[in-house]
Length: 280
Image 1 (cartoon, rainbow, N blue to C red):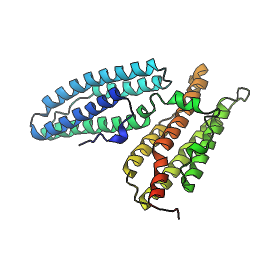
Image 2: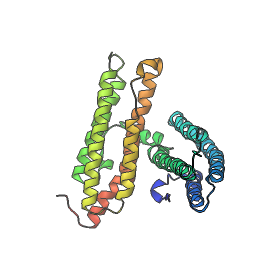
Image 3: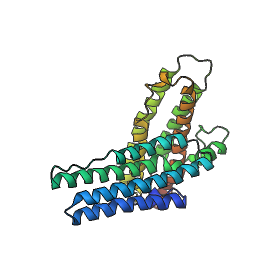
Image 4: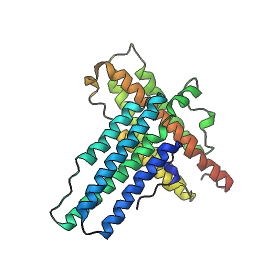
C-alpha cells in the first residue's frame, strides 16, 4: 500500500485532496487485484478511472498555476503529459493470469512512484517561486534566515548557494560568448555536491535518530532525480529560448532549495537543540 503522509501536503486544499484521492485509487486497485482472478476487468476500470481523474486533477492544478502566474507551469504541463502518456499507452500482458497480475502491479508501482516524485520535486513549489524571489534583493545569497544552527549543514548549504549564484551570474553574462559549456560544468558540480550534501545530512539524521528522516530521504531522492533529468545537450536547438530555459531552471533549483531548508532542514537544528544533541 502507498501512504499519502503529511510530508506530501503542499498546503493547497484542492490539490492535496486530489493527490490523496489518486493514491486512494491506486491502493483500491491493489486490493482488488488481490481478491479477483480477472485482472483484465480491474485493469480496464483502473486505467479508465485514473485517466479521467488525473485529467481533471491536472486541469485544476494547471488552472490554479495559470491564475497565480506560476513560472513552473510549462514544466508542469510536460510532466503531466508524461503521466497521461503512460496511462494511455498501457497494455495489459494477457499471456497468462500471472503475467496479467504482474503487468498491472508494475503499472501501479510506476504511477505511485511518479506521483511521489512529482509532488516532492514539483508540486511543493506551486505558488512559492514568486514569493521566494521577492523576499530578498539577492535571492541567490545564503543569508541568516537559512541557517539551521548545525555547522555541517549550514556550511554545505552555503556552498550550494555559491554554485547556484555563480551559475546565475553566468546565465546573465550577456557579453560572455560560449558560456554554455561552463554553465553545464557548474550544473554538474551542483548535482554532485547536492548528492554529497544529502548523504552527509542523512548520515547526521541517522546518528541523532531524527524522526523525520524518511520524509527527508524521499524529498532528497526526488530532487536528485529532477537534477539528473536536466539535459542541456539540446541547448543549441533552443535558439532564442536558451536564456529563458536556463533562467527558469536556476530559479527553480534555488527556490526548491530555499523551500526545503525553511520547511524541513531547519527542523533538524530545532530537534538537536531541543534534545541537547551536539555535533561531533
